[in-house]
Image (cartoon, rainbow, N blue to C red; front, side, top):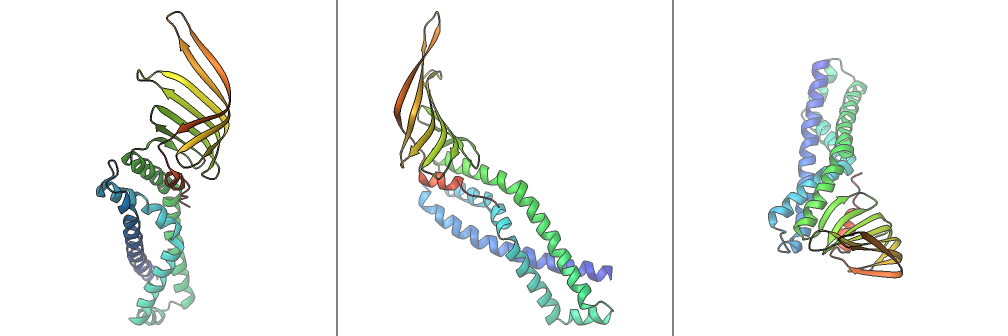
Length: 245
């Protein structure tokens, strides 16, 4: 019985991996085609687009794992049935219920492996992919979370702690760096509005640093609104919403 169970598990694994390969290949092809219009911008080359698409595959495998496992199981058991192997197994004393238990157990093992990939590998791969892509497109992103991000736009380093809907941000900080890589001023606001190429901080505090050989003073200005041109766009913000789950 153990040999038959291992054989069924092997068949399920082969067919499920085959389905996954075809499934991911199709998705990779369409995702790559979607990136073609970006190729040529800044340092975004065909190889960079290919790497970006490849790094996105773990999250696709995770999100589509139920369908992939189902199709793999159907094809594997279908092959066993059409080649009369199921009849031979039943003739050796293995019941349909036992065969079903082996199929379900193998499917759960495969889903468990995919779950680990989705929870551990996919989030890391997604973050690396978005940072890699953004840097190639000239957007300097230092860190990404599912709520906010750090990015550099010209002489400004911008931190958004909460990205509510791609248009309204919460707890926003703008740090202006001069040519000597010193901090000139910092602007803080609880709320900000993004309109495509500009970031408007509402009721902001602008902390201006005045340095002299003798001392350093900070001047705080209360601003009803503070506006900055930014290098990131709506498409970049949409990419941050990707959930590997």
